[in-house]
Length: 160
Image (cartoon, rainbow, N blue to C red; front, side):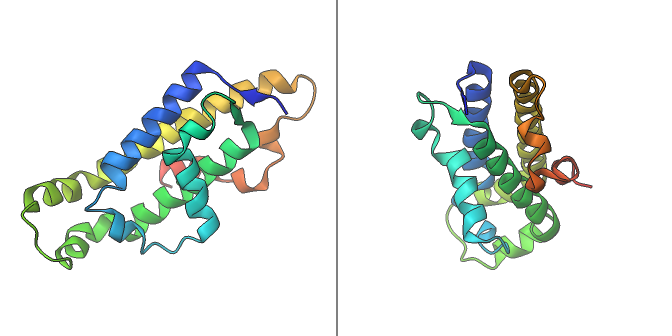
């Protein structure tokens, strides 16, 4: 399978990773994120997309692996939207008060909108990959139509 080395895709993956580390999985929110009922494989896939871009930047990305990573991040976004966002302030107040309380409160207040931006960036990446997939498939069936784990991903990313 051909590897994806498209500059726009790589920049979007970098943007997703930066946004995730700064706004979703920062030092204030990470302990709460880790309480989500996601399996180790899902967390590993999330980490590959958001933290390990250097492993793939020069050799390229496998399309099916990117799809799996996006699906894992979509499951995270949906679970966080359902289980964390509605009560994030209460969950954060359960942790010891630190001198960074203002930053912690900002992280909590902005979490729902940052989570939505994360999902929007994932959706943009997903649609970019679909276009590349369709072009490279030619007359064959595109990979995204062959992957069961992508069923319903549009709804997960849109928050339905």
